Image (cartoon, rainbow, N blue to C red; front, side, top):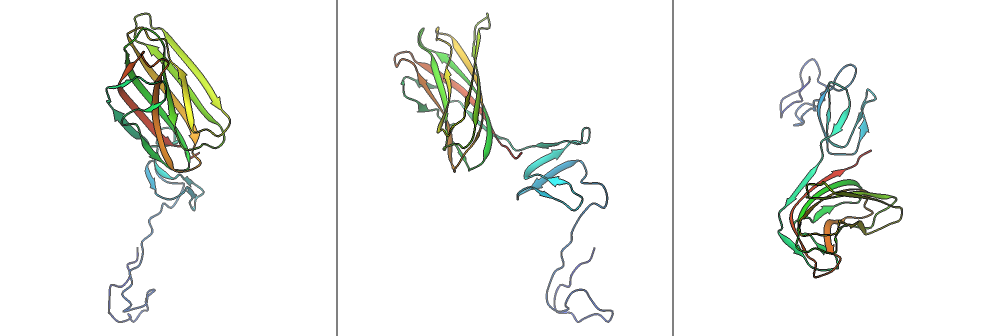
Length: 222
């Protein structure tokens, strides 16, 4: 390790790699001499790159596990909301506390929504509002009824055109009890904007109340 001169001293008699008296500070480069980077945490605020040993360093925060030598992304945004919000409109409305600013890139998101039914008819509906997407956008949804019989329903939709709303489809018909929605989406936003979870009901008089929402948002880098 070599340190540069710190100020106005003269040149040493043996010669220096740095210009004397220029007030310059040499830079230290830390590296590993063989093999590759050790297992552990990697923080890269730029785009992914390949180092001098041919190892790809991914963008963002990642962890290389010593047991399997695989690199795992640690980038997850966690959003939690307890809106106690009654949905009483057939048009989609924003769910309180679920607006997330995103950029023009590839994302994956997962939401868990717990809500109580205030009616015994119609069905709840949810959708993800987002900037226009490019390429394929996929969505997987599971609606669960909170009953002893464990009645469940699942809907899968794949969108192959640009969209600005990725819908979950209607949930189970309400029976005055409760439901849980698990929704996962994979999409590429074509521009910056907001990702928002929205809700509606099939008939305005058949309402339901959203008790809690948990969203996990992850950037996809490969």
